[in-house]
Length: 268
Length: 341
Image 1 (cartoon, chains in turn green, orange):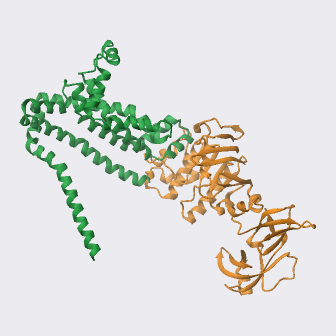
Image 2: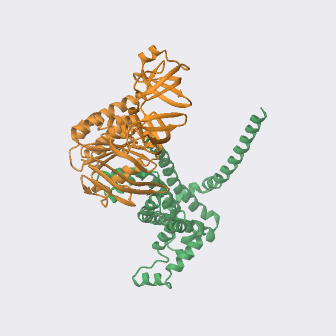
Image 3: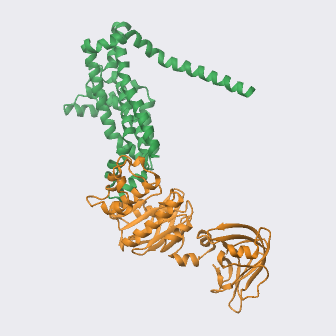
């Protein structure tokens, strides 16, 4: 009896702690939406600078995600399927962008790509200006979001039993065909979820972008600019519009997660 | 024809070590072994899905060791059917057909009614049939089966074994089938290899392996009921004597000295109420421990001076001898019924 009461008491404490944390996580965003949501939604139609910043954010985040998927999927397959020397080093390289402060990531990219650097000078000689251009925004987004894509894609590929590829090989597929005809179609929901997560991370990036490209302004930089120049009142609609946009990947991820679980339970 | 010569595969701490065996063209070869013996690794080595540390794989006399899986023309069916869940049944079967007709494979496996189905809605038995059809439709020169019937219920398993054997004979297909099930091996195998902890202990015609196991371990793995360890010596008259604890067992065969095993078939053991006046050289008093049905026979567990033995007798014999747990009985068997290995 005493044990049951202690258990019930423990459950109540856990529920209260969980509720406090959830409230803390939800309340700022809900308050922001309550105060600036309507203006933010209106701003999407009437504020040309906001519309431009959001369009640039969506475009550059999409470009960065496509790059992360094209370059990261083979690496994710390799990490999921093969044991090799230097695996720990590859993991460290992938973890590093997630561990360093994002302005530091921006500074590192600036050192690499500024016109005074060998790479920056070479690109400039070829007519490619990186710093202060949409290319810089894409690269900053790629730096912070590609590790997230590779990690999630690796899990999605590892979820597909490698024997499926083996069966496809015995049925006449080359290695490449077996990956394209079997592994990728079987892992596509997980890969899409990885891409959506990476896209969301790219779209919400600020720290690295602000170092590399104050102009042209993505939405997060615009929100910061309005806040520092005009104060909270002007920043609120931009911030609220960004929160509203964040709901798109959020809903997509939930839907993909639910479908993926259903498919996985049948496949197993 | 499938031939493995000294095939060695390393997989973490496990190694398939120097596997050598052959399955003749149009024959049904079975590899028998317990879980973890390396059966799947052996099949995957034949299919080209595992790199070899050394050794050679020949298919129909061609050395395919250096060829990738897609150029070996083998059909592989795993215990889990591994149907591609993003394709329906028809597209699964046609996957490896590459323009060839799938009609024959569909007809032989009897899956015509399933062709439009989503593979995720198939039962275990239906999935295995589709997996077989998919392998057959690719036109393989050999078929590799990894415990393909293990997940099926007993009646369906028996039916699938019959069907599989009939197709194989009819088409003259060369099959290598791995299993842990002794009965399955006995029912299907033309040639049998016994695999234990990564080593092929014995291989050859199935009747030979079953009747003349090369070692006590092989005898255990092929399901011999009575395997007694002891020290063998050869008498001056050529008779082999094996001392296994308190028992002295007489056997015939080639000269043998030192540690050895005696293998006695349960159906070779004769039970009687008193010591028989017969030609049997081995005769011992015993006590019945338990009786159990075994098909049309009765399996009688015996205690012979502390050594367990099993006899298989008819129900009529049980009645006539009034066999029951605790009954005192006499056990005898001929020296020629004892295989020393």
